[in-house]
Image: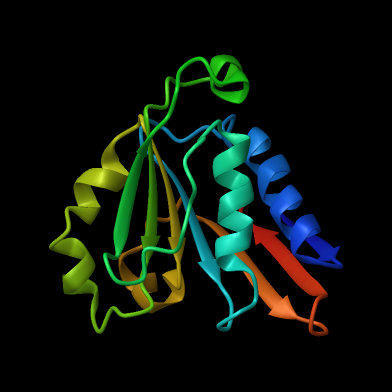
Length: 159
């Protein structure tokens, strides 16, 4: 199943990320992390969507793209409203950016397998298409495309 949305500006893209987060925490993952892979050209709004997503799960810190550090980990408050109602007790939110990744081994060296195997983790990956070969089957894929300078088409697959 896939869902398609059109956003007219970055505020709507962020709001869609926030709304989607409240839905995603209920996904059944068979004892594994929730994995979300984002695809899209530079400047399409992947980080903006993730900022909204992080807000939707109660992350209070400013979320910036971890392009140079590759991975950023945030603690998820068990008291945040969407997490209190979720089926699982999520504790960690990982934001990974594969823009600078040359091959999958680089991300594996950061403990990727352990991160995605932890049922208490939510993992969101920018430029996930660069590591598609090692992405788990339960990945939710989000593709963001330009329509105009401010308008975006966002397709969410495998829900």
